[in-house]
Length: 407
Image (cartoon, rainbow, N blue to C red; front, side, top):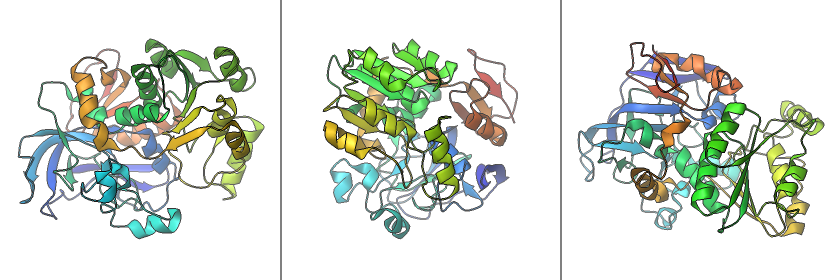
């Protein structure tokens, strides 16, 4: 089969590799019909996440058709259409039973690596380094699914793949980000980052009753998506816009009730503080850029809630934790407890509350992935979300304004 492989920092190649096989009686094999490049994949592409190995298959947002099931799989059969959550969970440990699926105790065979770095291990993840299990990802024509009776959600209607694909990660991640923000009817919510997770956090904040959502980004195409959802937008330019002051003005001088950091590890800033972060990262004195986190702590109202769905991978410097303490803010963060949200959010899609496919800007064949990774990283071609059809091998015309490329 063809698969998108990580070959080193900023080096992605498509290789022909061995098809996956059933290795555990609880496994299933799916033929991937849709997959996507996630913003978190760019952390791997940029070399920010350790323990990647040359040849690792990328991708944790995918869906497809069941081709084969192990002898202990009871809930799936050949031909079922399924979406795969990016977190891998056993369904039986203390954390799974407490709806904390992303903290599963049993799915990561490399838990000892995570324990050395973080004290404890969370769940395994598809296609996301050997810290999280080293499982092959879904940017491929086929994928092996462990714990197949626990993770996949069956799609038993005629909704197009593009409408349900993002149940695999970014819709639930944005929704959990909003849910963690403790939003009450009438609240003002600020969201940093209008990438896919941020956009779904904006949509979800409105679903949960926010009266005003303020979205912050620097790319016009992303800000337009936020405005289309009803958000007020701020295009940040550090020379002209003081984000903290702007948010204070838009919230009656109080500050937002909730702030959502949907940026995380690679926050961009051309200010002296942002340059300081880059220097410290280059000197290995910190691993992540917490520029957005600093702003959110400074901007939020006293007693507010800070939600962090943006990925952080390591050590942060110069974060004003004294401000967080002094203002009595609450914080919630972590990988998405995917399994908790699959059915409720599928129901919202089925009822027409949201069509997640609006975020797609590019649909490509698998051979085009190496070309699109740097475009996604540099935010060129007005890219907002890249979807891969692993079987597309002929050029198709542009559809609904989207760029379609073939192998």
